[in-house]
Amino acid sequence: MDAVAERANLLSNATSNILPLNQARLVIFALAVGGFAIGTTEFSAMSLLPYFARDLGVDEPMAGHVISAYAIGVVVGAPALALLGARWPRRKLLIWLMGMFALANACSALAPTYGWLVGFRFLSGIPHGAYFGVAMLVAASVVPPQRRAQAVGRVLIGLTIATIVGVPLATWMGQALGWRSGFAVVAILAILTVALLARFVPDVAPDPDASPLRELGALKRRQVWLTLATGAIGFGGMFAVYAYLATTLTAVTHMSSHAVPIVFCIFGAGMTVGTFVTGWLADRAVMPTAGGLLLWSAASLALFPFAAGNVYAISAVVFLIGCGGGLGTALQTRLMDVAEDSQTLAAALNHSAFNTANAIGPLLGGLAIAHGYGWESTGWVGTALALCGFAIWAVSLFDESRTSRRAMAARRNAPAHCGQ
Image 1 (cartoon, rainbow, N blue to C red):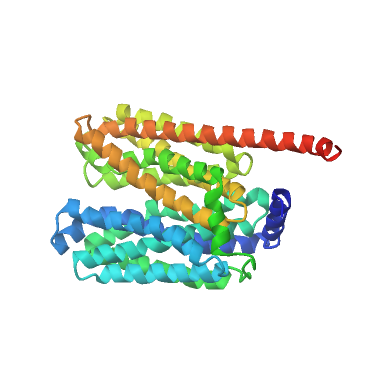
Image 2: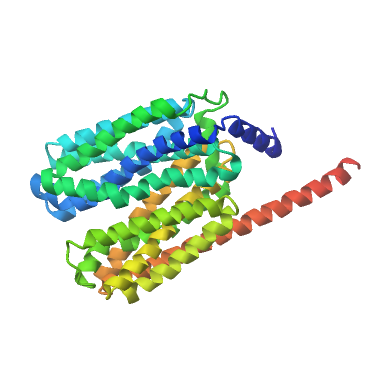
């Protein structure tokens, strides 16, 4: 099957699953609840760290390995589960992924020692990327093609709202009832998600041609790798600042520790607004939207060092940095365009890329701080990473344009060649 026919076949399959608006909203809501559960555990683990470190008898730097274990689980689990589940109906796969997530978080709440907690957090991270990847494909399939980026964005809004509501709730529970309750509430949210998925997500038969080998075809496409690299590097800028934001607020801005969560809520509000607006823009022009967001991130991150000394200025800048989080929606939609018939693996790998960014950004930001450049220097590190992400985006755009010109030239020459 040639590329044009293959794209037409994929579009036909996608449009056959479109649901009436009210039904589609219920599907997206169910998927977003899962995103809310995942976002709550991913971000609240950082705020619960002092409590489980003290309770399990380890220092905070060692306790930080618990967070790293989750991120490694995401990076490893996303492609592995996407390949293993290639032949599964997406509804069944989502239910199993969220069931696995519920069990791993329940085990985290019951972990008897530090070593067990590290292992259970690794297992908790394994379904993360595959769930989001499959959830976004399902969300995009139940709406018309011109609204798919908005559908993807609404699933991600579940995660961004978690930074506003879920994380403070889990943190409060951790303080009032013990850190184990923070993981237990996530397990309950995951069980609720399973019930919603079973009730609202349509049971669509899997593609009979789907296979792990076909999914691996994504790895042969330059545009897939360039899109993943854009996220892995460009998104690192936001994480460079976010990882050290609490300390910056207390050490540089001189905020009370009790007021710090308010700024994190402001960041979450920025991510929510950015994700919502990005969905609308990406449905109209996905690549310009992605490039514009990278420049937005570079500019807002460059303001961070100048704003760090004033509570009002840093709050405003943190909101602007959060808005750059809409990049996830744009890149996920871009992968749908370039992955062709390897959609599941490419969608899952997007979250491996973002967790790579979550490792790169804090690492480089920490190096800048360790070399004496100050807590504010994370803003300059973030700016550099966002601009590097933009450079990769520009290479992707140039490569796509060059490939398109070559294809057009080949089509023009084909009739003359055939006539010889």
